[in-house]
Length: 111
Image 1 (tube, helix red, strand yellow):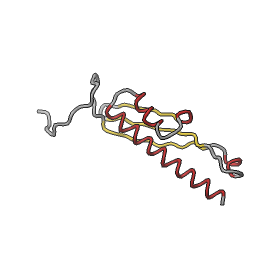
Image 2 (image 1 turned 180 degrees about the vertical axis):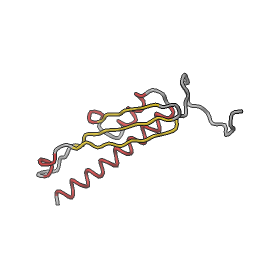
Image 3 (image 1 turned 120 degrees about the vertical axis):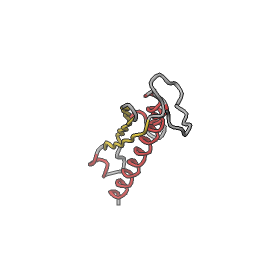
Image 4 (image 1 turned 90 degrees about the horizontal axis):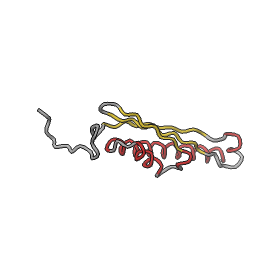
């Protein structure tokens, strides 16, 4: 029974890491400052156990969130140890080099 509880805790942890990666990716798509994306990921996870990597390309930004999950369930946690969970997301950049504010979409294509 305790093993089932631990598996559910790991599954919930993975969902939280995926949510943090999506949130950080959305923020990184509109703000060029990587610290803003790191803070966004840290809102739903423990910042002391979280590592956020931001990679920018010409038209996209990718964010990878790694999280060290403590296995605290009695008996099972002693044998399993802490787990490393990770998730990544990629979004289209909505800002250009030198911008401080996101680009506004007008719906028109440039000439």
